[in-house]
Image 1 (cartoon, helix red, strand yellow):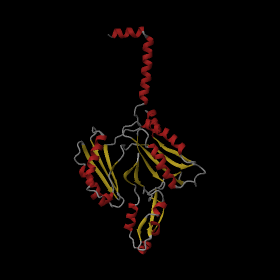
Image 2 (tube, rainbow, N blue to C red):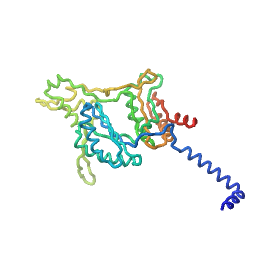
Image 3 (cartoon, rainbow, N blue to C red):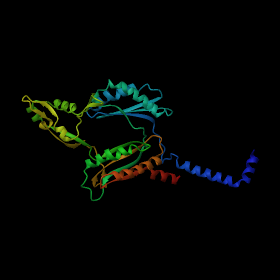
Image 4 (cartoon, helix red, strand yellow):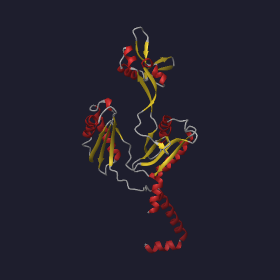
Length: 342
């Protein structure tokens, strides 16, 4: 058999040469697709459950949120360990599984058991959610959304964060291999209602009345339909708030003289921002906004970064004039440097 192979190879040098070239080309192609990284990912096979509850202190977070979540997840098959921490306004429970357990099966099991905590965790204290399917080495790309020279005064910190959340982030989430895009920096836009206690007392209403009025007057409702000849008229009531003027005109109650008491009569409605716990700056001169792109667990970092860069180039064309997306961390450089060293 071996003699026949050698004889065929000698008599058909062209075919063998083409076969070798094809094999080399295929090998080079496969090498380019290998999920090579600069450092090994030693993160446990885990599922994280995160609950944000701004109104609770650490002891209450542990008692009302963290402990019930740990308890319902303590008997999942393949469970290795459960660790957690409770901070002011935050509960993080990390459920570690054996390496052979499929992470998506594990997430399904955790999701099913979280349904059991709905009756144990008060609704006003937050809803537990699963962290993205990523690892400790999932931060592969970081960028900043900043104004160009000459446009510094055109965009505020709130504008930059709003553009990041509603234009850049939403498009990056559709990139193959991206698990999440974590925004930070800038000011998170909010509509603030600054209630005047003196006006509340003079009008005979309480802060609870204001809360109830806002909740009841900020929703759409649907009804049935009315048949009119060959056509059907669907009934729909639109009540979602669309601007600060809509908030101002919400009726809190009707006074004894029949006049409506509106939000603008007892409060000042304005744009504000969430309390910042840090800042992201560019060269220490100005505040900007940005994000960290988190890679899906097990994905090829080089391929994902390539897809992210292509999408960033497309997003750049849709940004308002004077804004750019400036990348300051790219895992590709570190991976290529490690491979060249090897």
